[in-house]
Length: 353
Image: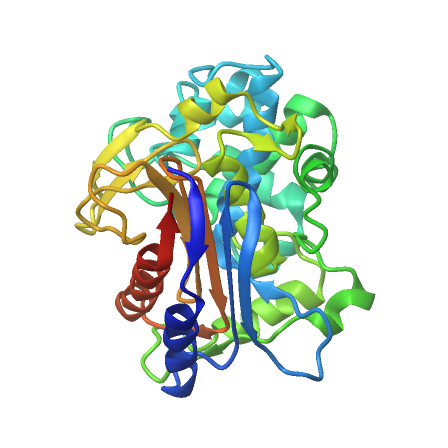
């Protein structure tokens, strides 16, 4: 299907409705078709030029993208054990954990509560702590969302493979070739005035989240699974490249074969919480059950959400991508409702030839 036109009025009506009804203080929406941004709408303070949004867990596919590139270069196979590059990771029964396991949240080390908050700024201490973890279940046995450990493990693995810091790997493999000029995991101090502050709704489960995230950003702490900041334009561009089978402008950022591998089901099932997951490699797939992307059941859509505030997806069947980022953290059920509604309006507003 080829994009023909977009019903902007319907999209603006829903976007403005969610703002005026008080669900978001600030928000930004970008839509692309065939690798081109076709529409963007923002509600941000006029006092902040080129505002940056915290994106929370949309950070995860950005981290995973470094490994996608290294896989495309032939540096490893998905089933390779992590200890091939990081021997100490195998301590305490983790020696059989594969790269695929961590990218599919089946590595068996989902919890981070035993790491003291004071250590979040000490990368060496984080790595020692991860090496000492005892898996809660054998790798590959079950899905359990690795909220923060995903990012630390993937980022360290990328460094072990490349010999570079994760930040340099990300710049070289992702942000520079894709021109994601407003996407960073650590915000330089001169740029921090661009950062939009988070706030929480009255019923959000973690009222201290805005304060904690602000401290992470101000103290230049890298938390790869959740600390990235960006714009809806950059995130939409990233997912648009996935939607268009790895092509960016006249170049191939990822071979179509690799896009196919990362966007097909590698793990599927119920998490211990009862939530049903269908996962690619660093991406969430349209399950038809918990459909966050308002996609038809058999539509090949992949994406990711960010705790209470953000969502983005790529539709590989029609080449459409969307990123919707806000700053008011809502309970996940309400956030999913609001973002599914926006996704549904966007999908129904696209006309094809």
